[in-house]
Length: 215
Figure (cartoon, rainbow, N blue to C red):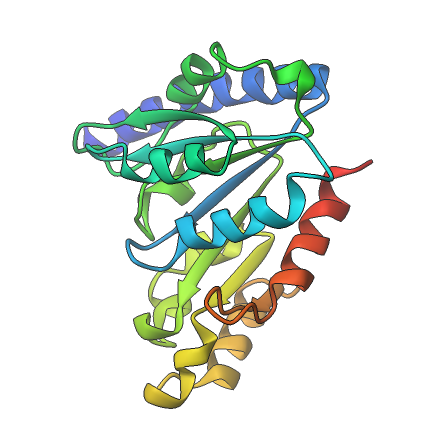
């Protein structure tokens, strides 16, 4: 019964996600689903990304969170259009939530829509929202074992951002092991090593994102 119910839920979500994807294509907007654990640095990375790209392309953000609007307020202060979605305890965003949020955005005027998903390494990867591609942020402080412990999110992502790289000397994170595990799971995954406090790797990350957006 539980397996059948889950299949029904995912099936209905996939149908709506396909409609979202069609609508995004018609509007000419590229959509990235940004995922990662709580505290991995997703929002700070997003702030740094917006600062580097806002004068090059038109961007809007959808923020997913359990209860607060704290992250959306940070993005709004950067002068970016942002829509907050509160899931009231739900561990991920889904296609219906994205469809509803997009009704408040002028998609035709956008080049890139970034969806910052709820902090979680499991559920967000299972629910298609109609995005063009996924990216996952993994903080050095989380440990190098996460790709093999939570493989789906890394298999599904076009890019993995190894964030807070400046803290590497103070942890037992094995960078080479993490890279090997990532490419074993997803041979073509793009890996970035970033530090938002020092600016390391941010130019490479934003250039990659720009190249995927401008067609």
